[in-house]
Length: 389
Ligand SMILES: Nc1ncnc2c1ncn2[C@@H]1O[C@H](COP(=O)(O)OP(=O)(O)OP(=O)(O)O)[C@@H](O)[C@H]1O
Image 1: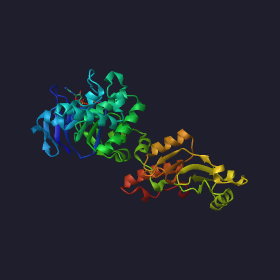
Image 2 (image 1 turned 180 degrees about the vertical axis):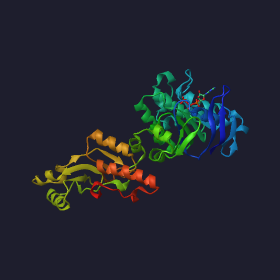
Image 3 (image 1 turned 45 degrees about the horizontal axis):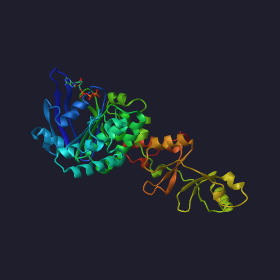
Image 4 (image 1 turned 90 degrees about the vertical axis):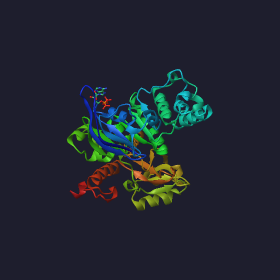
């Protein structure tokens, strides 16, 4: 979709911002460009919509050399989101969002309807925010309007230059999550500039790690973290890259433990006998439709005079859908002060699959690192344990 062929940019003062860059971004792919300040990320991005012209080399959009496309026509195909959102202060949120459709000559009603749809998509209720002015919004809300505006004309390509750079870390993480959800729906081809490796890892299908004007590594996040191509990349992703990996490694069904499972309406005596037979000190308790209710300890059941499991079980809210990241799992464990979390089917959030313990979490992380290093599937990796040593 976007292809750079031996592209260089030398500014008039002799600064080489980009040096012989060649890479390709596939249709619907989100590529993050990450690197320290001044390494050429913004220059790369601005050459795609011809805000900057390369000194040499060629850039193709959908197979067409952009040098031969009228810049104004080119920019209509490319949404552009920057950190200083650049909303028109005297226009309402709805009018701001409808700017490009207006320029494209859409009828007012159609443009406003499209703008309202987009605002909804980025999580801003058009009925509440549509008639406000930019100064009446928080920084995070302004960024969302910026994203909505860039998407309004439905361009196949989005260029995003530090779009979430100006908000605090909590809002930033929320915007990232929402943007990922949005991208899974709209599937744009996205070039996303950031200097934050965590953001690059979280959002990118692939990451281009920049050194001075050059790409040092162009790989999926797990590979950048697991097998940095050069000492420079290793240094840039940091010594705690194992920790960062938590956010790109997802919980798989094979990572889960299967404790005994009881149901709310099981009689206590039968439940206690089953726990004894299975040697468990506790069991997960499911409700009538096999959804998670909580847990019950063997001690509580053995000490009980009768009734059902419902009378002795405790509710448990620490759960995640399968496919959630190990980082979310770890954070959920800490938040609930829990020694395990329940993992439910991602599609049917009411279907219990198993539990993830800290030991299993650690194992999943080690397995995924090994799997990447060997190019194998995670489930096929056998780990050496203390017991084997
Ligand atoms: N108009 C210009 N004239 C001369 N040099 C420039 C110009 N614009 C950028 N540069 C230089 O080109 C290099 C790359 O700049 P660029 O803005 O692409 O970096 P960046 O990676 O986006 O940095 P940051 O993260 O700080 O935005 C820098 O050394 C910068 O000083």
